[in-house]
Length: 184
Image 1 (spheres, rainbow, N blue to C red):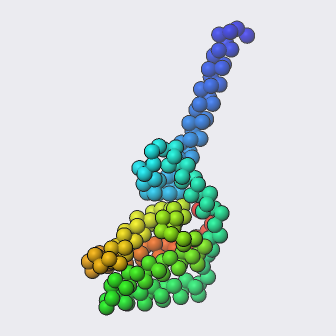
Image 2 (cartoon, rainbow, N blue to C red):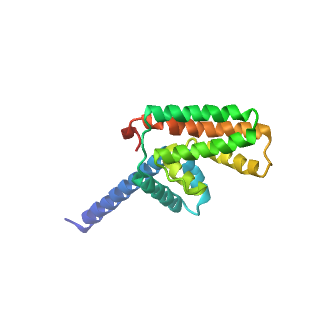
Image 3 (cartoon, rainbow, N blue to C red):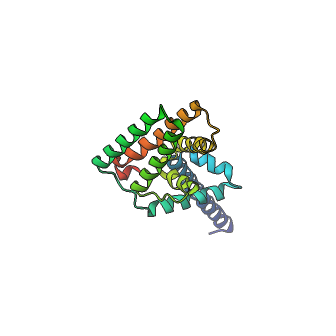
C-alpha cells in the first residue's frame, strides 16, 4: 500500500468518525428538544453556552428518571377534580384566595404524583422533563400568585392565573393515563 492510499484511508476514517459524532450530537439535541419542548430554548437562552444548557437538561432528565412518578387511581383523580371545582367556585367571591388555593392544590397534586415540592425553582426543573409544554402556564400563574400576595394583581390577572394553573393541573391529573413507553 502506498503512502497516498494510507493517507486517503486515514482521511476517510477521520471524516467518517466526525460524521458519526455530528449525527450523534444532532440526534441527542433533537431528542432534548422534543422532550423539553419550549423549555429547551428557554434553557439555551439562560445559559452561557449550548453545552452548559444541554448538560443542565440532561441532569434534569436524570433527576426526573430517579423519581417515583405515580399514576393516580381513578378515585384519587376524581377527588382532585372535585377539589378543583370547589376552588373555581370560590373564585367568584374571593379571587385572591382561589388563586392561592389553586397554587396549593397544584403543588399537592405534584407531591401525590411523586414530584418533590421543595421550592418553586426545583419544581419547575422537575416538571420541565415531562411537562415542558405547559410550564409557561405554571410560571405565569405563579407570578400572578406572588403579586396577589402583595395585593398587586387585578381580577383579570387572577382569572388568567386560574386558567394557567388549570392547564398544568389537567396535565398532571391525567398524565398518568398515558403509557410510560411513550415518554422517553
